[in-house]
Length: 84
Image 1 (cartoon, rainbow, N blue to C red):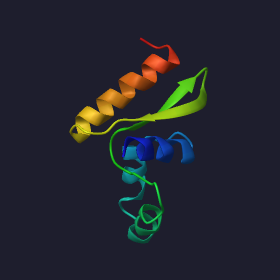
Image 2 (cartoon, helix red, strand yellow):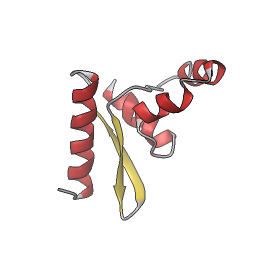
Image 3 (spheres, rainbow, N blue to C red):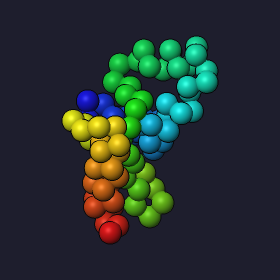
């Protein structure tokens, strides 16, 4: 699941996986179409890795609560990007 969260972020231009869901939640047909695609994981735990303003990758975390996954992914992305 973590890999799918990272894949989702990387393939949706760096949009965090939970932000993707927030963007499509009010559009039932769009939501159904996007969520039916293989590998799309639109819930917390996927975060982009940004270096010098450029998306260079993504990280996903899974296995905890939604809040824990989001926190762990954000910390991992910050560590890889050299922030903090």
